[in-house]
Length: 320
Image 1 (cartoon, rainbow, N blue to C red):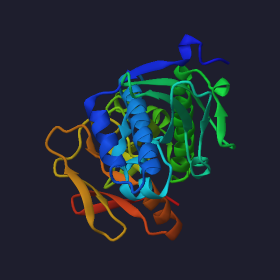
Image 2: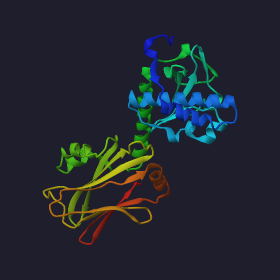
Image 3: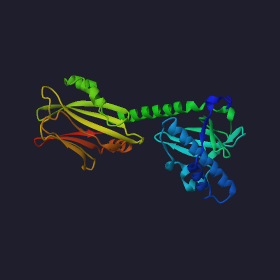
Image 4: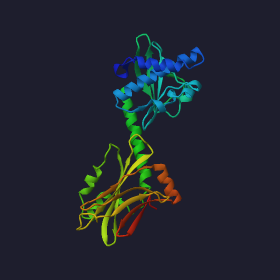
């Protein structure tokens, strides 16, 4: 595969801010060779960052990249760019006329892919030539490069795999008596509401789980629903929406009903109180998935509580 194929390349103009960063970082080095390395690495990272943000609409995080860390720049030959929620993309520079790119062993692991960037300082241009997924030898021939436009497919594949892994982890948090939301709402006579619940998100985070169960308190029946979504750009955070819905012939919640989530310590994290005519209550905490898994392992669980007329129903979350 030849890099002369037009579809493999993308030109990025290098502006004053790009050179300012590169000169600042290179000026912190103690010898000329290291300074040159850091300058080219920085320009490559900036060019790939431009491409990801403006062409792929992918969020980047320079500040959490090793290439933006002064100590890492001194100790390592690193040119990584953090892609939010996905991992690190390595951006390796070459100069015009070079046919191979040398990728140091210290960056052979923990990378999404390796984008090769031709830096033309005279013309103030960076040309993104293509990428490889894995590196296990220092010289990477430009003939090995995959088309740059395929990079978004790599991001999508990683995102899908992360989603599958998240769903598997989330499913393990709930016992078998939590059922799919459509089944619960159909059994309660509230079918059709599940579609509205699924569309009630206040952000674009993906639904990982939507389940519920029927409960009875003080002679009244309710559907307790839980909707778990990925918190945007935070891989280990989840938005957990608990919703309480009256079922049967009664279409509104008792005024004064209290709906709350308690931490394992007993501290109230969030709550809501029903007013006259309310037909549902929702509480939506942001929780750490690893802490939820640890709480389940240690049997130190969160509690969803519903209080009516001095009587309290408590549902453990996660459930055993």
